[in-house]
Structure formats: structure tokens, C-alpha cells
Length: 142
Image (cartoon, rainbow, N blue to C red; front, side, top):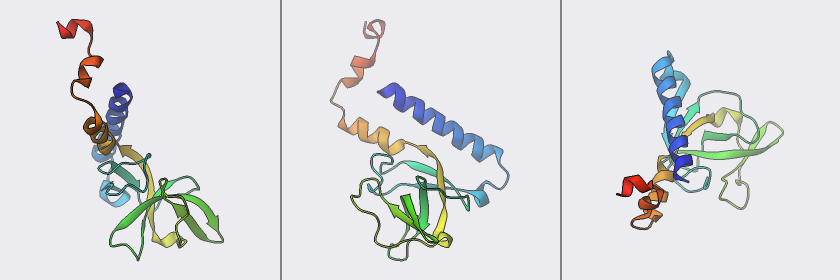
């Protein structure tokens, strides 16, 4: 379990590092956002960091960041369909689609990478005391 989390965290950190250091115009083409809510659980957890590519093409199934007039900040939900020229979205943890559809001009862009800080913290908080000892080798316990 922890090996998968560590592998995901390291690969996410590598993506952020490569994109952050290697791309000219990083701030114009990409945005890093911190997840605040639980509407995208289990895909995203509060505290996760998402790399969003601005103005990239959006497809059904993508997690997108968009501006919602009813919310004070931007929202990240999944595109679940298209109606005419509007996008239908829904949070993974929500039982029904969002009430209003989106104009494509309200979309900031799709998430292209996730650094699961929130998921790691959630697992750590839920762990029982001493659980890390079960993951150590016998030689490390001596």
C-alpha cells in the first residue's frame, strides 16, 4: 500500500519538477492548484496538488478546472458528457451531475498530473500507532 503511494508521490514530484524547471512560460501554460474540497474523492483528496494545463483540449472523462459564478473560487470536476456546445460535469463523490452546464470559455483547463499530498496525509492520520513497524524488514527491527 505505502509503496504505491510513495511511487505515485515520487512520479508526481518528478512531473512537477520537470515541467516547472524545463518549460519556458510555465506560468502561462500551466497552473498548480491545491484541492480544498471532497467532491472529487477518491480521485482527489483535500490537500492534493493538481497541475492544470491552461486552454488544453477537454474530453469526456477529464478532470477540469473551471470558473463557476456561484462559487467564490474555481471548481475541479469531471466532464461526464456534452450537450450541444456545453459541458456536463460532476464531482466523483456526487451522486448527480452538476445543475448547470458549462460554456467551454469558463474552463481553465484539464488536470494533467496530481501530487497526492492529501491522500498521503489522510492515510497517515487513519493509521494506527505502530503500523509502520509492519512494513519494516526483520533486520531493521533488531
